[in-house]
Image (cartoon, rainbow, N blue to C red):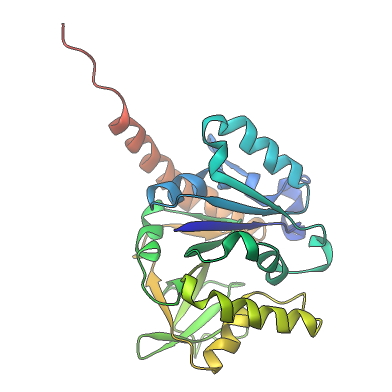
Length: 259
């Protein structure tokens, strides 16, 4: 499985914290959101990572070149020069040739999460699968689940009808890619460049697509859109992630030789 990180957006609601940087370069302890995502994806068995860049995308490239010198070949950069006037549906469209004939996980670049959330998603056999949390969270896309599948996804879903909160990460089987990009192409031809790519998935649901889901299992995560999200991530998510990664680094440390 490969992964695609959608990192082209400007993040206007949190510019007081980013100071012009892409949101994925917000730091939590010694790591950025991007670093946490990369390490989580590697732990889930992801082989190649594509990153769609736009707003100050050169900073992302510099971060990769500086911090992943010996792994640079695992990254593929996709520029979105129209990031200011398009939404993530267009970023996904621009990566279609690189994604051809590959299962992939698609991540919003502002999602900070426990790495163990990603493994069940990477193992899903559904044509499309969304990571969801049963807890309600404001200002985040919600889903309605019936008979074990996601039947509706929208930010307009109300508290009284929602089943779960969408975490901002979706997996796609290579078998669905022709239909997915055909639908996205139709939407773009109709001028719908400011939609979320989930709108295309929803259209496919209307044609019979089965969308599965995997749960967060109570593990910590945050999608960081505004200062309140940032505060939550700093106080409730990052401290737990730091413990996880410190533990993994300790386990990976070489065993001292016995004299």
